[in-house]
Each structure stands twice: as C-alpha cells, then as structure tokens.
View 1 (cartoon, helix red, strand yellow):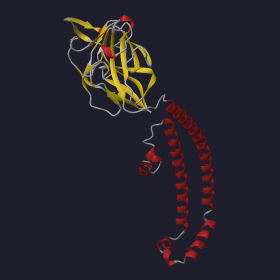
View 2 (view 1 turned 60 degrees about the vertical axis):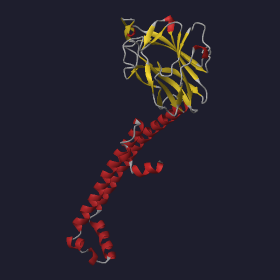
View 3 (view 1 turned 30 degrees about the vertical axis):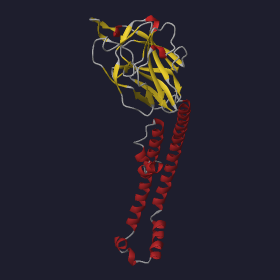
View 4 (view 1 turned 180 degrees about the vertical axis):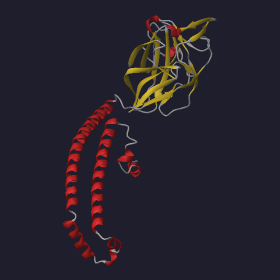
Length: 320
C-alpha cells in the first residue's frame, strides 16, 4: 500500500489536494509559497545571466559554438564575467540576500506550523489509543424495513411498566465495542380505532445491556428522555441512541439489549420487520424467546423478544 502511495503522489502539489488535516495542509501550503517565491527569484537570476551573456556574445558565436575550441569558449566567458558581468554578480548577491530573508521568514512559519502539527498528531494518537474519537462507526443492520401500517395493534410495541423489549445477539469476533443503536420513532396513528400520537410529548426509556439471560444483572444502563421534534434521528425513521460509555463485547457470549418504559410511562413505538442479510460482526437471534428463558426483575411480567421484528433495527459498534 505504501509503494502504491509513493507511485501516485510525486510531490506536495499533488498531495495537498488529498490532505484532510487542516494543520498539515497549512504546512504544505506554507512550504509551496516559499518554493514558488524562491523559484521566482532563481528564474530572475537565470534570466539576468542569460541576457548579459547573449548581449555580450556575438550572435554568430552562439550559432557556431561547435566551431570553437571548448577551452577558448570558457576563457572567453570568463572575460565576459570580468568585464560585463559585474552587474549580474551584484544582482545575484542581492537576490541571494533576498532568498536568505525569505528562507528565514518561512523557517519561522514552517517551524511553528510543524510544531502545531506535531502537537495535533500527538493528541490524535492519544485519542485513538483511548478510543475517544477518530474511530469508525459500524452500523450493523438487524431488521431491514418497517411495516407501513398506521394501526398500533399491527405495527407497534406498547411500552408499559411491566414490559421488557429484548434483542439477543452474539459477537462473531473480539475487538467490538457497543456504542449505541437505532430506535424506531414513536407511534403516530390508530390505537383501537382511536387516533393517537405519542410524538407530542417526551417519553423516558431505560436501556440496559446484559451478558447472558439474567436481566437482573446488567453490564450497563442509561436512561434517555426522547422528545420527537428535538431528538436526533436517522433517516427520519429512527432515533439515534448513543451511550455515554462504549461497552466491550466478547466473542462467543450472548448479550441481551433491553428497553423499559421509564417512570411507568405508557407509550408506543413503531417496530421494524423483515430480517436483514447476514454480516461478519454480529449474529442476531434466529428465533423468538419465551418469558421463561430470562431471569427478569420483579416488576416485569411480559418479555417481547422476537427475531423477525422489534425496536432494535440496527446496532452501532466500533471495531478496535
């Protein structure tokens, strides 16, 4: 891969269009400005030498160079420099001083930019090692699409004080961190032939993660107050739920991601249906689980854990 990069980018002029880091780009642009100015000065010196040489050399000599002995030509040019070239030498000396001033000016700028870049790269490296930022999120889809029915009894899950909605999954490899998931939006439609809209008020949902089927012992829990008009969405069909803490997952263990109504609230969400295709990261449950499979908190009387529908259409994980 490195060899391929070297064969593509021959110089900084090409590389600058592919650099995304602003600090690094400032360093490149600063150097290119210095390079352009320095080349401009050198071109000016070269042109002065050319003008003086051509002015002092007979045109027929330029055209008949091969007819003269090489050593004679060199001696003749030395005489040109001694007699007619003093002004050119003075100009070269002056421009050389200008280059030194320019070099000094850009050295200060470049050193500062390079120092800033180094500090930024060090912070980036620390952030990567700490898994805080600069990480790639992987959205692992579980359910592909939602039912378009506007009837809650046909296309929704009703949250109440005694209900737990559970998704069972198993990591296929180590090195995965659970960052969050997608939660379908609150229901707006018909409930027992009456119009109802759960988007008009905020609702609290507590999410918990468990290793195994014991829902009384959790690895992590966090409560969200979701008000539809203000909460961040994905494709206008899901709320984007991101935990404050990323939870490390282990290969070969089953995990239960659960949702409970907060503060005994009563509300409904739409639910997604139709299984998404297989993926290399997470194996989702392949069958519905009965209540007896779980060890539940005392207040839970119903567990909803379907494999072909539910309110967890996608998990968001980070690959270490």
